[in-house]
Length: 134
Image (cartoon, rainbow, N blue to C red):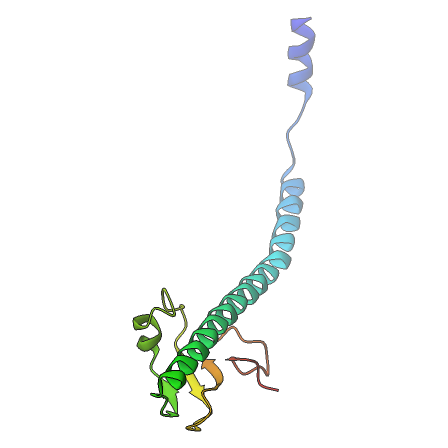
């Protein structure tokens, strides 16, 4: 029985060079199709993370503006300094985006217009701001 097995193993041949090249070519084609999709998913996930950070900043800024208004210290400034939200403990940490907070600039209205940041992950034609520009 051992001799039969050894004889069968001697008769078997490996893959030919052409077969190996075809398999490698198929793998390269599949990888080439997969890479752009993965990059697209990463870009979408980063965009969603940036939007969540801006949403958090927007809520914290709105809370800060309302607090200042009720204390009588709302000045209707053109924007709120980023560090104030962390100092006032409205944000535990600053999101990983560089943002600017825009207010309504009206002395009697403690409202935040929007939070804007710079992003290379924004979909085409979308301005990176929260709430989104219409």
